[in-house]
Length: 238
Image (tube, rainbow, N blue to C red; front, side, top):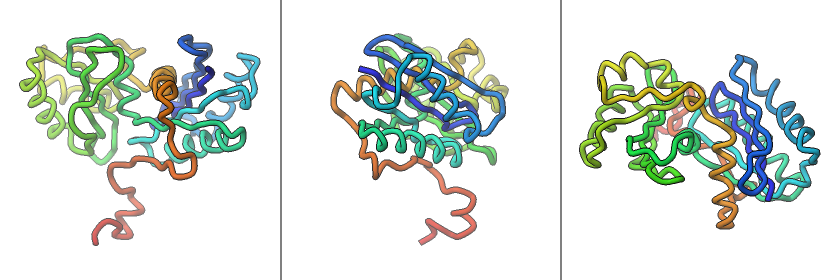
């Protein structure tokens, strides 16, 4: 089974291809170019490197948020377009869950935090003691301080002695997190800190084996909070 995974939910652009339990190719870019410039050339490169065409892929996967409003739309449009063009299944997965899958078999509490701008983060906590992450509680849009309090309660409830944070939200607010937790906070190596399309592909493979596919026409981004344009229009006030 070939699965092509596309991630553009954050400033990172990523594309990965797996065949059954083997990672075949992965492209990763965090160089400041827009996803409209980088994403489809990366898809083409990955397929060409594997001597495949889109019709040879068995399922497509995409991160559906939270994350950058524009990035999510670009990634979802690309994945939907490919899946519909060759009539193959589509799998949408949370960006925070994908990020949590960068680490497995750890006794630490996993916190995934994305920079949501305006002094806020998108965050969630996970149990990563097994091969695949299990979310603890809801995905949040909140200040780093509120997230710290939420994660601290989970530390106490689960009896864990420490935690690790992944995501560009940790990079942005690192000092605040370090000041709050001190030695309880473990710092992950750089290759685990940002979303990886390979992690998305791995999660998508599990969904595909269970025939747990998304609706290609109805799949929408998960924003968690309103966009700036929606705020200006007063959407959500009624």
